[in-house]
Image (cartoon, rainbow, N blue to C red; front, side, top):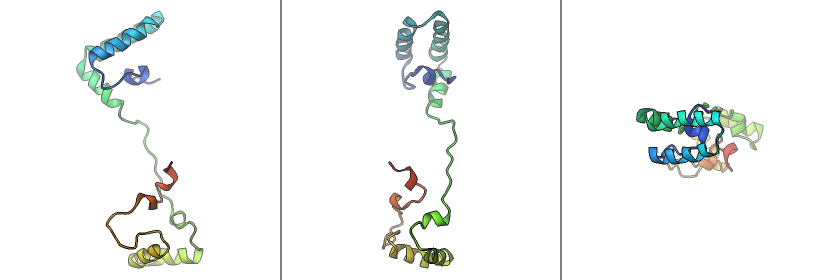
Length: 128
C-alpha cells in the first residue's frame, strides 16, 4: 500500500482541507479502532500542514515507476520489406532512404516537417 494518503485512501489530490475532512469523517465512521488511528494521523498530516499536503498532492501526479522504452531495431522498422530491399535502404544515404520510404508508402510524399504518429515504429505497439 502507498504511503501517500491521497493514493492509499483514494482522496482527490485537488481537494480542500474541508473536503478532505468530510471524506475522512465518512471513512472513520466505518473503520475499526486501529484504522481510525491511521485515518486520524492522515487527516492531521493533510489538514494541519499545508506544505505537506501540497507535497503529497503533487506526488500523486508522478509515476514513480520509470518508463522503459526500447526502440525497435532497423529490421523491426522495415517489417514487410524484402531482405534485399531492407539492406539497400539501411545502406542508403538519408535522401535516398526518404525517397524509398515514400515509394513504399512509409513516409509522406511531400516533406511537411512533421511525421505522422501512425508511422512511428515505437508507438505502433502501444496503440489501442
